[in-house]
Structures are given as C-alpha cells and as structure tokens.
Amino acid sequence: MDDYKLLIDLHKQGRRQGPGGDAETELALKLSMIDRDATLKIADIGCGTGASTLLLAQLLKNSHITAVDFLPDFLDILNKKAENAGVAHRISTIERSMDDLPFADEEFDIIWSEGAIYNIGFERGVHDWRRFVKTNGLLVVSEITWISDCRPSEIQNHWDNEYPEINLASAKIRVLEKHGYSPIAYFVLPEHCWLEEYYRPMQASFDDFLNRNGNSEDARAIVAAEGHEIDLYEKNKAHVSYGVYIARKLG
Image (cartoon, rainbow, N blue to C red; front, side, top):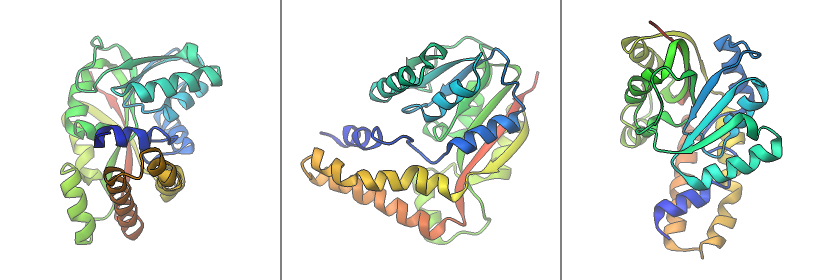
C-alpha cells in the first residue's frame, strides 16, 4: 500500500480530518446571521467524512447541502452516516476535486469549507469559488493561521515548509477584501478542536492502523510524522491555530 492509501486509511477512521468542533460550526452559523428556517443551497467543499455536513443538515432543516470531496472512501462514510442520522434527503455528495468544481455561476447561498481550502491555497480558493456564490451570499472557511506575530523557529519552519501561504488573520482578511468579499466575522478555533476533536482520536487509532497495515515501514513513518506534528502543536499552541473566516460576497 502506498503512502497516499495509507493516509486515507488512517484519516477515514476519524470523525474529523482536521481541527474543528460541533460547537464551533454552530458558532460560525450564529455569526453568519443565517436564517435557519430559510431554504438555502450550500456547498461543503472538502467535506471529508462529513462532520460539518451532517451538523449543517441537522441545524438547517429546509436547506440542501452538496458535499464535495475527491476521496470516494470519505463520501461512502458520509452517505452511511447521513442515512443513519435521517438527513440523507438533505445531502448530495459529489466526488470531485475542489479545483475542478462543476457548479453554475451564483448557484449557492453559502460555500462552507472547514480545514480544507489549504489544499488549493486560501487565495486561489477565495478567488475561484467566488463565482459560485450568489451576490450577498456567504463564504465560511477555516484556515491555518498565525495567532501571534512572533513564533519559535521550529513551528515557523514547519508550517513554512508545509503551507507557505500560512499568515496572520489580518493578511487573510485583506485577501477576502481583495477578491470582492466583505468580512463579517472571525474567530480562532480553541485548543480542544485540535486535541480532543482531532489529535487524540488519531493517536488512539495508531495501534490499529499499524496492525491493519502489517506494521510496515511506510505505516510507521506516517505515524511518526503525525506524532511530530502533534508534538509541535502542543509546544507551540499559543502561536498557531485555525481561523474561521466569514465573509459576504459583494455585488
């Protein structure tokens, strides 16, 4: 099994494929000032196994959510969870890359994306997805963000290498304004969104993951890399998190 398949095997076991939390998804809805009784069309881009998709479907009972991910393994899990939760009629899944979306201009009232826009880069996502949002519609995204202006070199070097577009919230907000959005809210994901919601469940799955994959050298390398990232976060959590950005598309 190659590294790509191993990473899918590890992450599909988790409820979330990145930092986040139900309370934070609901806070983003509240700050968006969305009418929860309205009939809305929402695209959840980079939905993973659907933690946010399912919650949106439960909270917005008159809306329909198009959940997009390029990994069929993740979408299969999402579809099963939606059936079990009784919300499958409010969710459609599309297996598609986020840089090749099949949507019409101004098709959606809201584009939602938690922990995924980095796959194509924040600025490209903000720019490319804008045309799919109705005028006065919303963009709600979470993005890896520096939360202090000075950082230890180990965390600076790690994220500069992993994602050179990482920056302060002020820079991310300027990108939104540059591409025709009016920012209306921003908040930082708290520590529990990283540890309790993402890293601790992943750590608890390491042994099963290694056993499933014959304790191979490649599998052990992935566990070591994930463990290194967890250690870096725990030592440097005062300097980095995900920011949640909520912005309205201008005419």
